[in-house]
Length: 610
Image 1: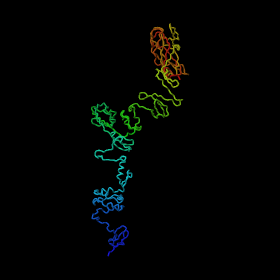
Image 2: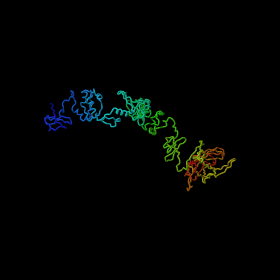
Image 3: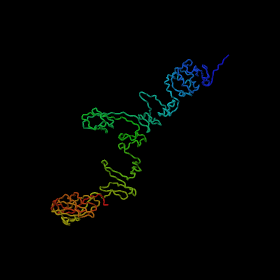
Image 4: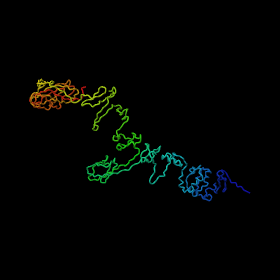
């Protein structure tokens, strides 16, 4: 007859008071078997076995290592994927020592891999230390831009590929590093100019087979990248303790491109300077000293996009920038250094098709258009300055009248000829100019006849006499004796245009006789202003060079122009008194000298007396 043994049972760990030593009890809820040991404590039957084997195969994992499964939420159907795995115990034992926690292993929860897919582990030789790279991984993430930047997520192959392509700018195409040679070279993308990416990104790098050079893409567009070699040229000289300047065979551009040695001793850069192909020492090298100059020049200097204001005219070879080297609409004022385009950098005359505006153009500057130049301004009168040839030290200015002087616009039309000597431009009142003979400032002449003179009361010449000749004119003359100095006087009122300076004179005279002796005439003057005393002394008497008489009676004689006569108290709006005299101490004529008149020269500083 069968016997039924019923064990104590319940839910959870039984209390010690409900058991006796060796009596079993079952936890139906958790499917565990408990009993009471000799010390009266409740223990779980089978807990902490020293050796665990499955189907005769000993499991070498420790309890701590197996405890990583504690808390795994995978279902039985999901764990059943191990059914049929052919990996050996040794191969699976590579997990021995893995430190991943249950929460980290839970990333497998929901995996749908089949037994065949898991069999890829069959034969894996990785150690526990190598598998420990998963320690800390908590999730799987499919994120093309890697934006989360997670340290605990594993990306998919697709997201890695998408991210790499986005960084290399392939625009969705494939990326291949099959030609990468880690010891000799790196193959970069290449192609013609037309093969450039349609939508490039800043930082793109490629080799352009059209231009034969490397290029990169920046905010300013595509530009060349790379550098050239350098030429090293040596020049040798010998010092003479005198010469400081030596001519090199090439232009090193700056001192930094030179290396100078005197008798094998390197020379500091501050001991010499370079200008073009001339190297100049601050002190002449000694006699017999060996001078060696090594100059370095680049064979092909290639740069990317040039910084603003970085190219000066000195760095551009004359006539060497062609239209083929400039992209359409790519030269802006920001790329040209201030004041650095000079006329010698222009291959031809500057041609302006329509108009040219300078310094404000049509609003407040110079506007040049076909057949017209307009000089406008921002509030000052417009002007043109013509400078002299000596360091621009002086100028002549043409300037517009102030606004308040205008009643309307003024148009002046030039004549079609250059006129004659001493002619001036005059207007017809309607703006048409022509050359006319006009009064010019400068040297002027007044003739004073003897008839306008009178003898001095003291030491005066003879009274005015009229002399009839056998033919033609009769003479009005003043006779001056040869034995003593005699004088006569006359007055002149100079025009306001007189510059109040010195005067000169010429005497017109004759002798009734045949003696060829010389006659010398002197002149002095004084100006008397309104309400001033006439009783004022003359200025210094100036005697002209004596002139010999011809020897033919009644021949007219004209003395040489005198030196400068300074008039006492010279001023405009005055009456000027002159005293003419014969200086017998300076002449040799034995007969009376008959004065017919004098020509008086003075200088004006205005065209008229207005």
